[in-house]
Image 1 (cartoon, rainbow, N blue to C red):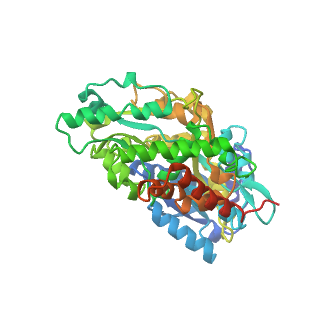
Image 2: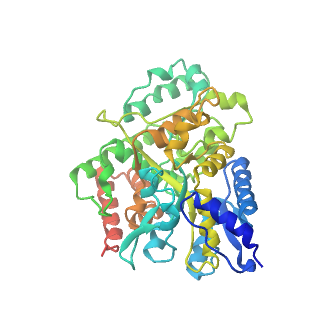
Image 3: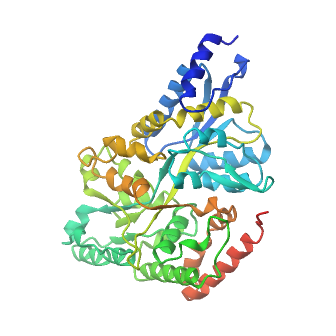
Length: 456
């Protein structure tokens, strides 16, 4: 039997999060099965387990937790959503690889009631990254309870800049020119005997799954093409400004590769390969999501402090460039056996003090989805506590941001899965297409994919 006195007390505690605690009459049904993506650093997994333990102690419920690597979780989640044999909750770092299409197919539970508890505090971009269009109900709803968000900053070997005789303070302030700054650094380092050194970790990969797509989106934004997909889900490949931005992006990136400033293996990199090459100092600068490159070497304080994290420069026209953010958190598949506990756990997790403690214990690789947290807790912005975190946090939540396109239309997920932008680069590099020819070919395929998704 359930201890009614304790349950009543817990209900009062959860009421502070503006969502009353669901009453669970059967103690045998108070266990929720949760799948969690493995962190990039061990501290993230330990932080998650602590959050689970704290919730279990407070609620009396149990969390049956399974932790698995990113790709394994993706595969298992797809299989579960296809078969209907699902867990109660999936906690994912990059849920937009799964959510847009499954929300469209009506395979997810609406968690708007969970999000509502903290909605006024969440960033506008986190909210956009958490809501998706349902093809059956013909409306958008929240299918992700967002806990964290991230952006892609620049990761730079400051010691290599110094060795080459350059000063990072002299780097230009606009996008293309900033990338160009590192090319003579390569030349200087090779003249000093570092013959295998490259300037740029440019993920023009045809393999993916995520880095190349994110990189291309940032180049589009830098060139004025950020409205390729708008919030209403409409595709704008017919907009001359978008087409011009895509052509400029492909021209710049493929020229960097052809001119020898990018490792030749970049065309077949997966999401971990650029990180590994960065740690091996195969190139001077990388553009990649979160602080994972730095945190992976935090126990080597010499290397940790040789690295420099920088935010985004201006767009090529000199205007402020927004950072494209991704959000992570929990979602509930339809068919879950214990929706009540899954929702209650995420309601608890979204409380500002819980969110903050969890992400701090995870070393700040992810930034809270509630911006006021980083303004009120000096741990996030004090450069004396950490040399990298402040630049990242300013980029991720305090500067202008935009949401990932996946949330605007599930067709963008199919575009990303097909690695259309990586193939676009390969068409220029391997097949000698012009950038305009490659972009037109890519746009034709993108238009075909989007034609299959019609909002009612």
